[in-house]
Image 1: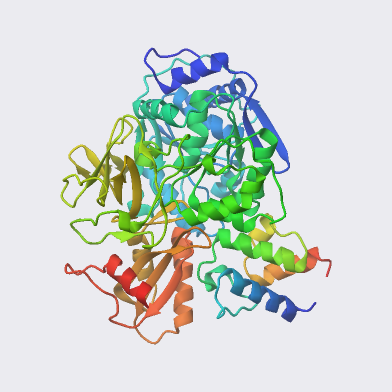
Image 2: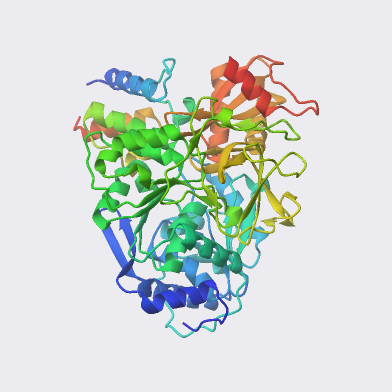
Length: 81
Length: 549
């Protein structure tokens, strides 16, 4: 899976979690770029990412990722890519 | 432990310790569980108390504890009482908040309480060591755990007279951060009322993920169990946030009976636990919804999902609580079904400001907060302090033996707003058929995930962002049905040609760094914000206008 696929899936997840079809993201996107992205909604984002990418993400490393790109790198590493 | 003669926290603990056997405190730490007896906890508290004494900490000195959940964190609080000091848990630095602002706030609290000690865990200690701005003398910091070489040998401590019990801090940025000083007699009065209503027994087991710096975590899930000998299982709040199922695993493993949850937690559990996961939750006697407006929709979704796991609908209860009253003000009886009303069943209010904001829509079921705790009196007041009739909305005012007298601030003791002996809560509600319903508030607070934020703080911070028309900002509370909690919505008017999305990002970042709150931001056309006749931005009117759009 290439980076564009990751970003596309990630963006779809954010749109669903935050009920906002206008959300557009890039690797540099952080929580403050999205209305209402707090620590609890972050857990819902991680849960959806876990389901989509079939990997465990609810831990300190993933919780502390600074932006979308960092989180994608964590997912890729855990999937052995 | 030598005990004082009058009925105090310390002689209550001494009395419980004489008959307590078995495990009292369980701490879930990753995949491991630490088990401690009541005697283990007291022994550790005595050991830490000796260290306090060596540092010269004594009568009425303040001890601020910033540490993740552990035996030492609990023992550090009890140990403070053993030297006559006044403990307080403070929130740790989170990943969201700006470290500079966090340390500045902490520094100001320590500066306000000059004769104090900061007790921290290893993680915090490392952060303090790398922080030059705090300027703390090493003698004013105690790191946990105390290693065996530093641990003094135990010697009996003569109990000092002890009037102050602990301090709970309100939310808010530096300028408005207020300490609620709880006296020993207030705690004992609260204990007596709590035991007539919530009735903890030694055969119970309280399971909690709540932070100890929150009144519900501290009082309902640590102090009341400590003073009644009720076993507790504590889960780290961050672990629970990431894995909410830990609460149910702990209930199933340790036959948990008593649970306290803010409303958002009902939704977080429902939203985040695997729909196929199953737990045996049949041991639960009560789950008390507290610290946020209790919403029927959150409770109903929770019961639909977890009823099949053994949660009986009759086990769901509510309570209206606040740090200013130690904790609980009302309770819904454990043997009665929760009452529900709708807006139309209440008479309209006649409050002075007209700035009250309601937290429920007109067709929404409103859960009763139950009956007032024994010894506490509630008065529903109009705008000038006159009592309202049954069923008529007004400001909830309280009087009783657990109510505090003053806030502690950097400017000294500040009396709370009162009508005669009654403390004005700033909440809007009514008493109907002997039960309290809280429907809104006139005070300038937004409660998000059980935590209070002052609207004026949020607006002041937002006003610092470049591109905002000065003073043309309002912080509003909007209910989010999905998360079961309020959301902060900032409506702002801009000046100049800044790009809207960049401006919104800057505002969200500023609020996150300064206050640790994730907000929604909307830029609205100039001149759209409505002001009151006195020239202040009207929260109630702007909320109405926003909801109409």
